[in-house]
Structure formats: C-alpha cells, structure tokens
Image (cartoon, rainbow, N blue to C red; front, side, top):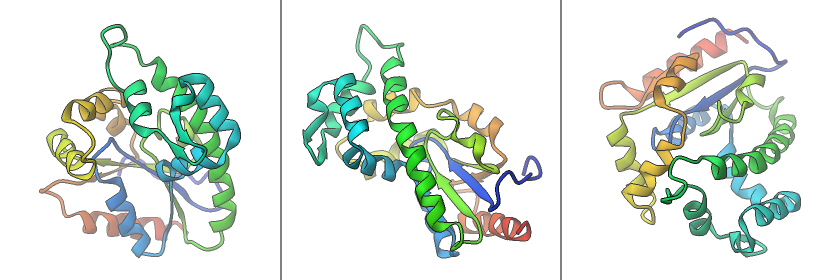
Length: 215
C-alpha cells in the first residue's frame, strides 16, 4: 500500500490495470468469487464497437471501411496491424493508437456509467478493469488504483499462449506502445505481483479485507 484511500464516490470504486499479459483478468476472477462486481472495460469495448453506431462510423472514417467485416463483426486483424504494427515510416508514431483511444474510450465511459447504475446497490464495492486506465484518464474518477505486475518475459509467454494468432513481434509492439511498467507502478495505490514468488490469492484476500474495512 502506498497511501490511504480517500473516497470520492458514494460507493467505493476501484480501478485495476496492468500491461498486456500481466494477469488482470485472473485477478478479477478472484475478486468476483468474493462477490465483487467487475466491469471489464476491454470486453465491453468490443461490445460497444458493435452496438454503438456513432463509434462505428468514427472508426470507419478514421481507419477505413475495412475495419468492419460486417455490421456485427470487427476486422480485428486489420485493426491490430493498422494501429499497432510498426511501419518503416511511423515506427515512432503513436498517433493511430491515440486516435483509436479517443474514439473508443468516451463510448466505454458512457457504458461504464450505465453499468455502475445497475450494480452500485448489488456489490460491497466496484472494480473497473482496464488495460489503459491511466492513459484514458478514467482513473481520475476512481477511489484507488490496483496495478497487476508481472515479469516481461512471462507476459509475452502468456499472451502467445492465449492469442495464437499473434506473433511475438506483435506482442512486443503492443507492449512498447503501452505506458512503461515503471510509470504504472509509480502511480499505483496498490500493487499485486503475479509471479512465481508471490501467492496471488493471498494478495487479493488481503486487499479485499482492507476494502471491506472501509465500508
């Protein structure tokens, strides 16, 4: 723990973030078994990319009609290659990532507010899971942020095992465009270490007990 929580909201709202492959989803599943409602921003983003017509039009205007295979299916391979793959003429340019985030994040923010209204009376406290918590500024309205940390090589192995369609180079490209791990750890209120040296469930239980004590 780095500091005491000062509640900003009527119900405790906590963020949980970490780079690709750190194990955020695994940590969230443990919290869910404890009866905590978890908003998965990345999964919900995939949903709003299909259901939000304004967002769909903005994506087409930004990246071309090819971004959708059909009205109900995003061309994910095209989107990943277009946004994340380094090209000779833009290897140091994150502008496409920023454009994508500027389109998707506001829609996810609106979706989270709807979800919050549905769950605020059903859970002791709420968790919002997002890979780009700090980058999107969504952390500012939350009471505290948990960062899940794991060694780089382990992260790459996990992603390659989970996402068989990705290459190691693609995973490294994605990691290189995310906030540096050192910066995430600096901003964290709490850190969960998802590695061979720290029991994962024990860390989650300790945090759960702390959050419960604040209610």
